Length: 58
Image (cartoon, rainbow, N blue to C red; front, side, top):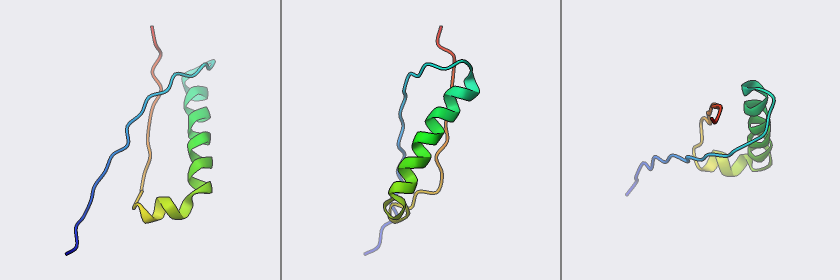
């Protein structure tokens, strides 16, 4: 039998940055490096997108 498995990975990290763009870029670059180093695994898992956004903590 063949099944379709859908999954979501959710996370949160606190980073120091001068602005929202810098915070998002820092994490984006880390994720990009992780994906590039494990490209076949991400392909095998059917990963098609990763997204996120920074929010200023009060």
